[in-house]
Image (cartoon, rainbow, N blue to C red):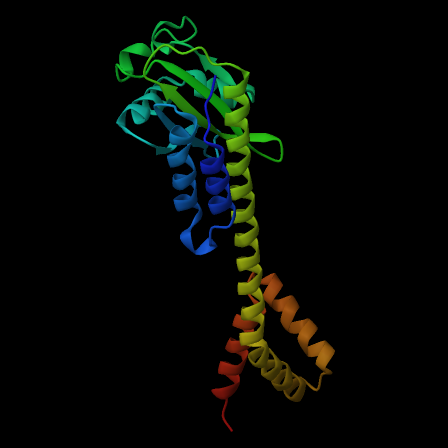
Amino acid sequence: MTHIDPEALVASLRRLRTSSSATGIVHQLERAVGVVDALFGYSGAGLMFAEEGKDLRYLVATDDRGRSLEGAQLHLGQGPCVSAYEENTAVTSSDVRVDPRWPQLADRLHPEVRAVAGVPVRLGGDPVGTLNVYQSTFYEWDESDVQALYGYADVIEQLLTAAMAAEEKSALADQLQYALDYRVVIERAVGYLMGKHDLTATQAFTGLRKQARDSRRRVADLAAEVLGEGAGEPR
């Protein structure tokens, strides 16, 4: 049965949930994984994520033994953590070195990696990686272990969701700032086209936008070019 220090767990979750975005998502995930083994009394922990091709990749491990576990699974394409990702459910092994489900795994593991458990890390219900822990001796995982890991995987999922939201907000802020920075350029280009071609403001802007779209360029870039050409015309 898992033994957890309640005060340490609450303090850890509070720090993770309130971490400044300036620390970066990778640093926050490293911190999250770094406290799992200490809080739950496991020998080590790690985190793997899927790339675009849905192949898992190592991200964080608390020690060399954990890295051997993740590296062996990635090399062979099999193991409890790979299965947890592929099946989108918790997978455990009381002694992975003699587990018949993955007969080739033992030869590639550190000798002190024995019992292994993995749970999926999800976004929108779909697995995007796994949170993995191991024990250096034979260990019978029970429901309290699995629920504890799912609970911490949920914290990691919240970190990922917050990071994605922050990135979206940052992208929107950049777009708004771009629009503000180049508003004057666009307005000047519209005014130039109105005078040169006897157009209304709506006609000038619509034409500018259509030309930018047809040439797959930004309106501001085309506006700057129009102004540059206008400045080079003989007076």
